[in-house]
Length: 191
Image (tube, rainbow, N blue to C red):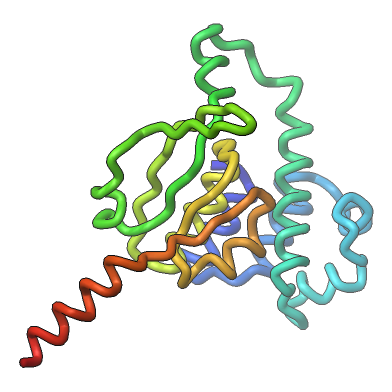
């Protein structure tokens, strides 16, 4: 797990505080000063100091810039260290996919594993990310973007938050017929 994903996981899954995690990531893991990080991220140094001291929580846009900058610094460091894999693994990595983020029950009804668009012609694999909570959905969206997803599909309850955290296109599941069926079933159960 990379540094940025580790921070997100620690915050959302383990309830850790951002200031300590971010201080360790910037100064120790990445080895950059707050000033350097400020320049690379575009977040004012005064704002970073307030976040690092716990005087201020970042808004989603600032948090996203911080996480993306950590990723960029880390990827730049790893760029020269990555070895070359086989041609098959390289082709697999470059395959386009759309991430589907929802409960296991919703994923179980998917009937296809790929989709082809007509104009422009493109084929996408469908990659499932099963989640059971809002926090897991946010983490899955971040992971899907990291995995190289071309787009995300997720539930309406998290889509407005997820679209602020990721930079890839997002569409929201709109369950029309299943909602109507559920209402009818609820009405029958109360009769």
